[in-house]
Image (cartoon, rainbow, N blue to C red; front, top):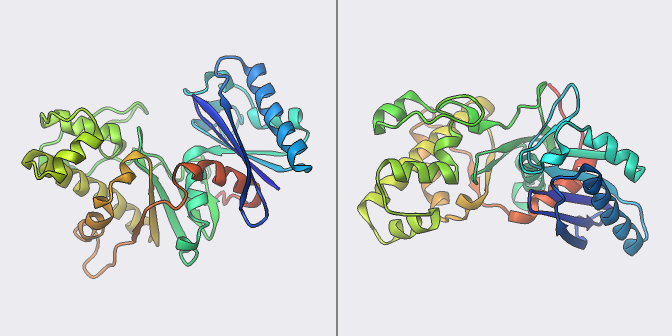
Length: 305
């Protein structure tokens, strides 16, 4: 049995999967964010309840926001501050008396979506999250690729093309990572709204902006055209570097059906003549991919170089 945890700043979702990846058990609780001992105890209780209910000892994979320092193995998480500075995997392994695999939640999404029927024939799958930020994960032949410094998949922090800045007279937004002009600041949901404010649109949210677009409102249509051009440039850049077979989009912006029609054609202008754009796919498991991907962590080895 495989146990997966999707841990966020508000809730912890724990699910158990059988050998065919059918979900057989699920429970949700509020996340203890400020007390580390309470956090460890909460995870221990959830595992104990699953073990008792299912009469087994499942393998454990955990997906959560933030990063794990590759040298010290300590966590850094803004959403769950109590785990910052702790070797969470080691402490949980001791608490639960079994190995624990921990990964960024965006990579868990990518791993889950790379292990579905729609991607079974694709060797190189990139999961691209378009939410509050722009994260992702690279999966090669159903294996997560992390890289020496654990940076593989951080596509949101590639700098935006100077051609795009000049074409649309875009501002160079600063990024919370410390860099300037990161794609995340333009292609994420918050980035799309930053563009909306820059061009003085009245929409107060992404769904509202999409609503104006569907009504044919001229400024909204121009904004979405700019957004699609920026996003297609980012994805095409990844395809030129990695020759990606398929992109699976996640996050709130991925719920916009028009993107799957517009992006392939827009990508052609950023690729070599005659090159076919990678498939642009909607997620199969959506919001449930994080916990499903976490459950898969124990079953996959990482490619470190």
